Length: 140
Image (cartoon, rainbow, N blue to C red; front, side):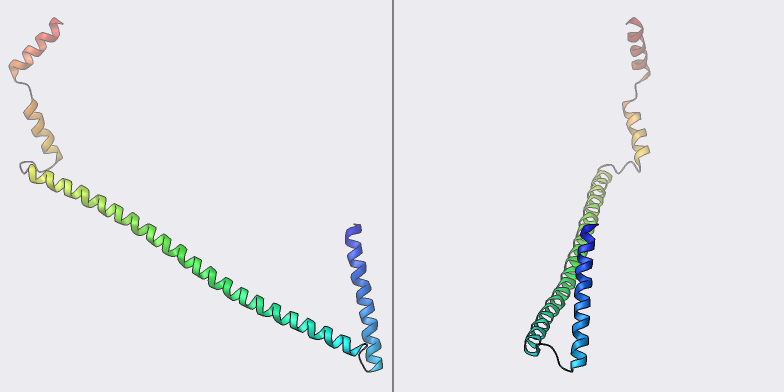
């Protein structure tokens, strides 16, 4: 609590002193220590002007940099999406090329089911082979 009271009391004291000084100068019609106050005013104005230029430049450059990096982020996202689409298209072309080569080799079959049926017929056992196999299994 003491930490907040001290700055408040200092601020209040400075306010009262400045208020009394300005009232005294108004009644007198001229500024107190005119030459010193003019130099202080000039110094304050030069510091204010320098700060204004600094913050104006800083804010303008900051916005420019924000836009610059935002554009970089957008371009990176576009590049990433472009790479992903290119990979997918390349994979589709590769799969299509493999299917086209397979289709050129097997012009007899039209689809996968017909190919399975054809393979089943090729490897099917004859009646004699089935009987031999059955006898062999029963003999153990």
